[in-house]
Image (cartoon, rainbow, N blue to C red; front, side, top):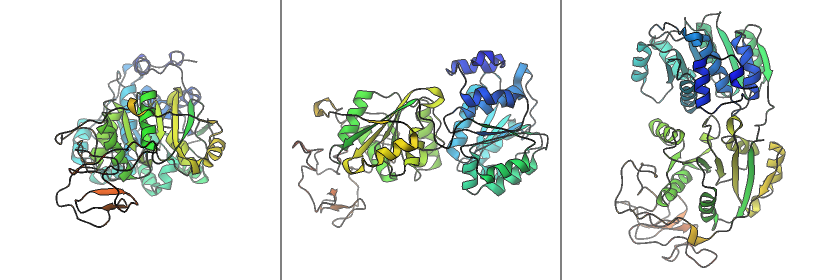
Length: 467
């Protein structure tokens, strides 16, 4: 079946066609007819299966089919989507705006960390659909800047995750404020007893649809692993980027510090890259996500903050630069590619003593993880870009410029002692390699005899000079 045969409003169908959606996913094909009948609904669906489009189409058809639209009183939306995180609120809001592009639907994402006065101003102007986190929704309810008495559709997205995060009381207070005649849709990756109990209390004879098990579907994702050493790891990554030429690549690292460091290295090699991790302010995280979503950059270096809830449909490659030792975290990471039936690749860089986790990953994902041979040719790797001054607002670095924290000269640096990264800080204020007692000035040596990156008195790190 195709969307064109599902009886959708022409305005919705036109937007779906422009988004490249031709055939519905299983949850869309089986769920949309039930949703459009006005049934309450419980759907078990993994992230990446198209559930946002499923409930988005339902909302838009109910509110705008036939060009009827809804008269929106200020601060009285007609549909509400409750999500667990700020990032998911933004992503769902963007998706609904795209699907409702030709309906005239007004969508607003509300979440903590953003300017609440700006949200209040938009609510006063009139909003059709609100996507929000429980905490910020409660803030607006207490301020009386949002009213739920006109709500026709409520969606609980990633309900299991919201309960895990302790939002049950907030969710129940929000639902208790909405009309009993509302249509309630609940989507969850798993259906534990707490979810089903919530459904019984606040839903009317809900239809239940299970389109996938507890494991993330990876049938459209080709999985590979590359054996490497800590000395070759960076060059292997650069080689993969040269060979694969990803349109959008999500690179996972273990730590926030590692995300900043690798991001700056990639920027220094000329890549359009940004970092995403929990130490960044909400505004910076939003800017990184928006740049990645709009393909203003093509590489996002992220911690596991982004392994769930990051919904960008065109990610071509997921690279595990730091392999997680939890196979379930691995499945959530690679689930960022191969979305909405599109093909994707997931590549993990694995140390020789980590290969024992591969059979476990294969069992959890019920799919083969093939070994990929990568031949590093130093002369083919992108050359380092030499910056002569800091550039505010550029790519890379925690502070948003190319000559950032790692490898740049810092005034007032401590002399002597050990750095937080474990390297020895010499009397010039620079660092030696990790666990080193101060290496020679050529830096760590590559097994071939070539220095990985050389150092200078102007500022240096294990990965080389930045300025």
